[in-house]
Length: 392
Ligand code: NIG
Ligand code: FE
Image 1: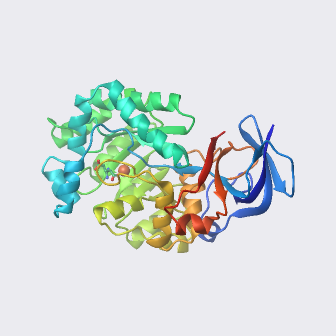
Image 2: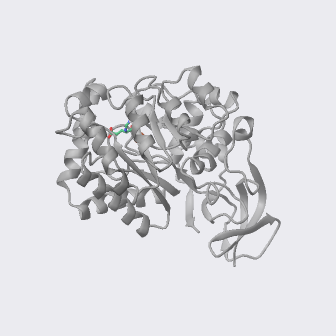
């Protein structure tokens, strides 16, 4: 057993069995001042208040659950900085994609890159986000866009999973864009044909159900053919119907939601699907921010994730995500904190183990420098705050 003592603030305490937070409950979290926390076999054994001898002196710092990032495309090859310049010069995401840039550009780069280099480049980014406090993350395929390239990505994700202390969940996103050399119909069929092999590697299946990419019917076909739980890209570029098809197939999450009407909020009520917003892509692409507050008012919970990828969100910084949740979506610091911890863990099926200070959960924690609390975390969002990250 190891004890962290002298904790100024222990934040993010939840009772056992709480797998997600919805409505008003998302605005609450348990906190203890002057606390200690005991860890055994990598798990939280107990915690309490008052002086206690310890093995790790928190020196008055805050202890909180590490960030959970339920939506990333962190495995990619090369760089799309040329498109960054196109974007600055006024081209939209859709226009860049229509010129053969965007996801297809990443696919060309990835298919030219060896598996080893892809692993090394991607691992460096995973290490970067772990240093920034991410203890669990989901990683998608979707830059291969041919059977060989997609399987290469899934193998790389698996290798990362086995080589880092953070928890990694893998998602097969073959249906990210139409691969070169295929018609739309041929490609959807190729994705379906690849499912049995992809499912040996992946935990989830995803479809980019949006204008100019995959239709509701394509999504329906792919989800019906898959035995994996779904996470869906929906409503980034248009009101796509992706939320409704996701809910119909009991998707674990529907993600993006920059363009949401009340019908999407209605469809999500009473479902097990976690609406997930990605403020980093709203920021980078100049899209509207998701209507997070309206979801909470409707009694739903929301998760926030980074979408770390080379085209729409080249940042995996979850504290920046949290800050944008507050500044741009008007979430309270506690609502945003729960969105980047417990609810984001839920959105990748990990909330029984990650996302809160709860007896029995993994001791996947951030220890901050002295003087931090959840409000300051989002407010003073660029000041170094981490003293140490624990992965259990
Ligand atoms: O989540 N929207 C689709 N996919 C990614 C972007 C991928 C890219 O541009 O490379 C996203 O934003
Ligand atoms: Fe994405």
